Image 1 (cartoon, rainbow, N blue to C red):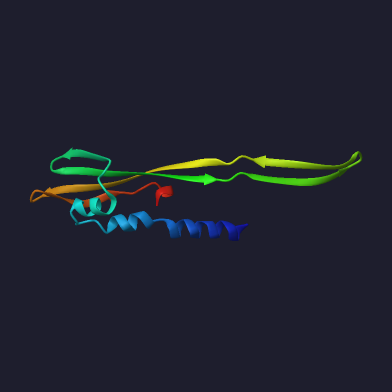
Image 2: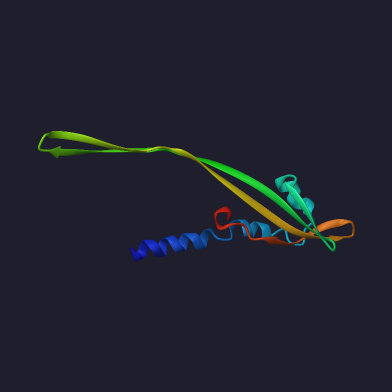
Length: 121
């Protein structure tokens, strides 16, 4: 049991930072660099004093298949097959990626970013 918990923690730590590592590479670059890679932002918020937040929204869907399992049981009345079904579903994940920028020389340059939710990393 301890090994499986340690393995899970190691996987989470390995995955943490994936999106953040990519976002970190944009610091100091003009906001156009992000736009060229990911398209126009879904929101731009003027924060005042020459600062803005640029936000990109990504929605991912994943079809999770259902399962079906059965068990043959022997009872005093004969053999019975019991089936258990779990229905499938569509999983929807909404992620926001936010960069902060400051105006300089008529352009906007990335100064920082907001850490995405863990499941969006």
